[in-house]
Length: 416
Image: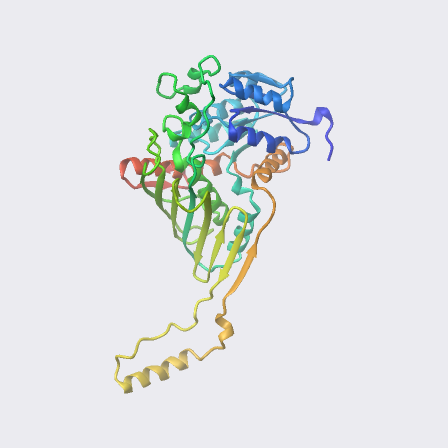
C-alpha cells in the first residue's frame, strides 16, 4: 500500500559494511520505509551510501549524531559485535526502534542490560537472525508441533564453508590509511592497538571485536532450533575447536564442535544438540542444515528446503531366541504371537514430504520488523529471544578456550 510522506518509517544504518548495506537494501524494499542516514568509520563506505541512496543522505562517523536526529524513527545496528550492546541500548534510550544484527551482545553479561533498555523504551527491538522468519523453519515448527517425527531425542546442526570469503578473508582497500578511517572509534572499549587495516576489515577473526564462528554462525543454528522446538535454551554447554587451516594470525577458531543438553519442557522432551562449523570443510562453498531425529521420523532442513521422512516404529519389539532349546523357542513364540498378532506391511511403510518455498528469509525478517514498527504485532525476535540464542553460543567460545563445560539456566538466563 502507498504511504504518505509524513507516514514513512525513516531509518538510518549504523555500520555500513557488507551485512549492514544488505540490511539497508532489505529494509528499504519494504513499502513506506526510507533510509535517510548512515554511519561508518570508513569514509569510502559513507560515500557508497550516498551513491546508493542519494546525495541528501546524512552521513557521519559518529553514531551519536544519528541517535540525536528526531527525524529518524529506527536504526539498523550492523557494527562489529563489540559495539552491539552499547549502541543498541543507547538507541533504545533515544527512542529509536532497533534492528540489531546477531549476536545481540558480545559478552554474556551484557544481555540483561539490553533487555532492560528494550522494556523501558517501549520500542521494537528485533535481532537479525533471519531464520526465525524463514518459511522453512516456520513449516518445520508446524510439523514438529503436530508430532510428525514422534518424540525428539537428537538434533544435528551444521554450517560449513570452504572459501576464503566464507572464512572472513574480506577484501582490503587499495590504500587503507588513517585519514579515511576513524581507527580509535572502531576500537572503542576493545584493547588499544596500533592502526591495522587487517584487524578492521577482517574483524570477525579476532576476539577483541567479534565472536567467532559461535557468534556468527552457531547463533543461526540456535535461533533456527529455538524457532522449531520452542525451547528456551540448553542447561549444559561444551565445545572444542581451534585454528586448523586459516593460520593467518586470527585468534578465532575456524573449526568448532559443540554438544548442548536441552532439558525437558512443556514444548519438548529432553534432547541433545550437536553443532558444527568448519571453515575449510572440503565440501563446496557452503553447507547448512539441521536433522531433527525423532522416534518416528527425521526432519531435515536447509536454507531453502525441508524434507520429512516418516519411519513409524515397528509395533513388534522382535526377539532373539535362536540359542534357546526348541521347546523353549516354541513356548516363547506362542506367547509372543498372542501378544503381537502379525500386522499388514502397510502399517510400517515409510513416507516422505518435501517443502521448498521461494521467499527470501532476509526480506521476510525485515518485513516483520517494519510491520512491528507500524503496530502490527510484537517483534518476532526480541531481546529475550536474541539473548537466549546468543548466550549459549558465547558459552561455546568460553568452553573452547577453557576446556570446561558450562551450566546455563535458560529460564532465568544466568550461568550456573
